Image (tube, rainbow, N blue to C red; front, side, top):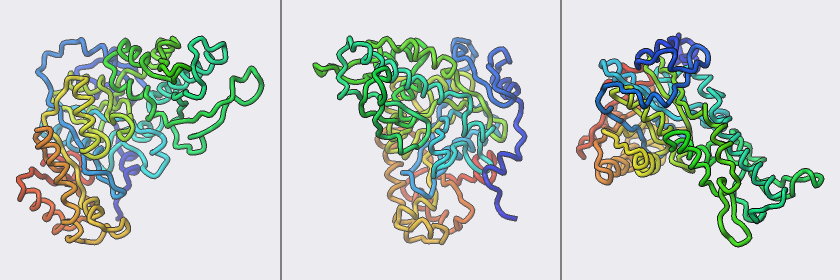
Length: 421
C-alpha cells in the first residue's frame, strides 16, 4: 500500500466540534463567532479576561533557507504542538493563513502535512473565514478613494505620476501586475498606469498583523502613504479620510480564527503577510491570545532563519514586547543535499558527500540564532520516507560535534508521537 497523501489523511480525519476545542481553553460558546462546526472567531477583547495563569512559553519555529525540496516549518510547528499535548502540556499553535496564490500555484497549501496538519484543511487553504477578502477590500477601497479624490478636483494636489498605492487581488495573476486603467468617458476616472499586487503583499496585511486592537489598526491604516503631491510631499490615507472606512471593513477579520490539529490541539490561524515582502508572521493579536490561554505556544516565521526569524525577533517581538523561550530550526536531508549541489530530480538517492557539503547552510542559521540573538535552539531534522539511516546519522553527528542540540522529527509520519523528542 502506498503512502497516503496529505489531502487523503485530512479527509479521513473526524475533527471535534470547535466548541469542544474552545472548552480546552476555558472558552464558552458565548466567546465564539461560529463559522460552521469546525471554525470560529474569538473576540480579542478576551485578552482583558484574567485567566489566572503565569506567562506562557513561546517557541519559534524557523528553518534553513527555502529550497524546492521543502523544509516543513508548518508541519514541524504543528507536530511539536501535538507532541507537547501528548506530554500533558496546555499548548496552542499560532500560524499564518495561506494565500490563494500559492495554494493554486507551485507551492500548494499551508496547513501542514502528513499526520501533522490543521483542519478543516480545504477551508483553511481556500476562503477560510474571509479575512483575506476583507483585507483586499480595505486595500482597494483606499485605491478607489484616492482615484476619486483626484477625479473630484484633487484638493490634495496628488501627482498622478507619483501614485505608489496599487490595487490587490489574492491570486498570482501576472496579467494584472502592470495595467492601464481609467479608460472610457470622462465619468470613468482618469487614464493612468496602475497595477495589482497579491493581497498578502498589501501594506494593509502587514498593518493588520502588527495591530494590537481596532484603534491601533485604524491609526496604522491612516499612516499609509498612497503617493506624493506636486511638491513632492507624501500623501497619506488619513488625509483622504479613508482609515475609518478601512478599519470598518476589517473589524471582524481582526478576531483570530480558532481551528484544531488532527489530534485536537487548539490552533489560532490569523493573518498572513509574505516574509520576503513584509514581516512574515501571524498576527500579534493571535500570538498574544494564544499566550493568554495556553502555557506553551508554538509559532513560525516565514522563510529561513536569516529572514523570517530575524523579522520575527526584530519587528514583531519588539512591537509586541515578546521574546521566544526557544527556537526550532527545521532542516531536511533533501534540502541539505540540494544545497550541496544535488539536482531536485536526484534527491531521493543517498549522497553523503553532497549532504556534508550542504550542512554549513544549516550551521550558519544555528549560529545566527544562538550567537547573534542569544536564544536556545534545537535543530529538528524533518524526516522524509526516503531518508537513509546513514544520512540522518551524518546530520546528527555533525551537529553534535559543534555542540548543537538536534532531534529527529517524525511528525509527518507519526503526528504528535513523532514530535516528542
